[in-house]
Length: 193
Ligand code: 5GP
Image (cartoon, rainbow, N blue to C red):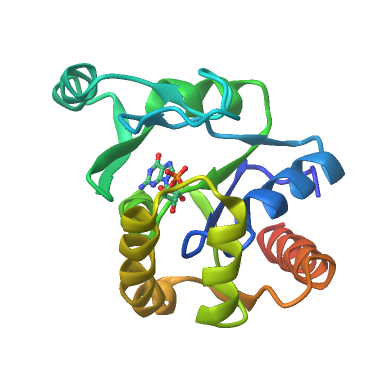
């Protein structure tokens, strides 16, 4: 998994609540060559989150300034908040020879695709069904009812964009899904080498 010329840019996207956070953690734990890209966001920090680790939490003014300074590889507006991947955070990961793991939406994946020089692998994770997604969002208990409804409405739009990804995986069982991702990574790296 480690001896590729270019660092691997692994993009994991999914509708909210499809288990992507757990998968991201598992990938990092199983392969220390992957470092997660810490995005910037204008969203409010959640109780379980740490500034600088989960996200770099910034004001809208700061975010807009960074856009003007051309500091982002990609950025998008999602649920009334801005999210973006800064060039400097990616460069510091690459400089150390690590692979990069992106937890970003389809808009971000689309923008990264335009950078032809990147060694991109884009995987879309689907929850087993909408009911399951609803259950997971409610049991996570992080968002109020309005926010949950908005996320479910965004679900359809998200799924439509899954066709732009290299692979789509249904997250029925986390362990099976995780193994599939590992397989896709090693197949991708073999092709490149
Ligand atoms: P959350 O607010 O639940 O942490 O994330 C909401 C959505 O924003 C998720 O789909 C996540 O993948 C996406 N996201 C997080 N960071 C970025 C980013 O830097 N760029 C883009 N395009 N999407 C992001």
